[in-house]
Length: 291
Ligand code: TA6
Image 1 (tube, protein in one colour):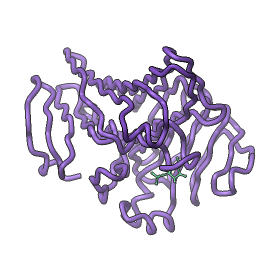
Image 2 (spheres, helix red, strand yellow; image 1 turned 180 degrees about the vertical axis):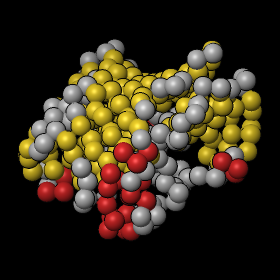
Image 3 (cartoon, protein in one colour; image 1 turned 45 degrees about the horizontal axis):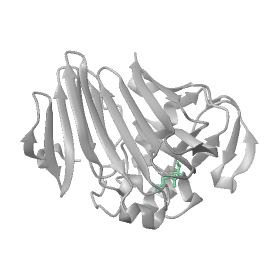
């Protein structure tokens, strides 16, 4: 994403500005502690850079800002289902237009809140009333939470993920720990497998870990940093790297860009979460860099 193409629409405060990028509205945060960008299309965090750090989140250099699609990279919000459980894949939240509802700032950083409620379009795909709130707490760390409320008169169930793409120096020198042993291998039709708790990468990897620890660690050797990903409200953690062949087949990824990304996703997989009318559940991920 070429930030020079961002045009300012409206400055909301010292740190928060509404901008436009290729027809998509982006909330831009520039604060002494942190820089970040959040697209209202998808309620999607696009970049996050604590002061003095490299970008923590990966965004494809070929990302397409097309409102019928999800942006490749950042933190897509997969909701109300994960993957191909229904159509569209990963749900409709990541291609819906969210509303900016609040922004606050102090010396430590900025908090931005977006909301998405059911409308005619969402009800034609998924016939339930809901209220979703995404809260982005941006400081030296990033805390992203998705709170879903059942505003309907009947119970409904949902799954999904905060599908975070992390920026790494070289996938060949990365290891991930803390996911537990058991996983469903999506490259083998969801076969139940057991692995080591330390995962390295040398091929397409697409796994749903079923008993993850609360904190998953990405050891990014060549960047000389460790990224701690602490998830709550999830019952699984998905780890994904498409490797070369899939990247070549994806129009919105450069052929070798799989080398600099890995997804670690705070996921609600199986069972899904059932909410009674008026009930609420929060899925979150907290991201911290250590050197
Ligand atoms: O979370 C992993 C995954 O479900 C993979 O199977 C892969 O397809 C990826 O998400 C990206 O999905 P997308 O629909 O954004 O192309």
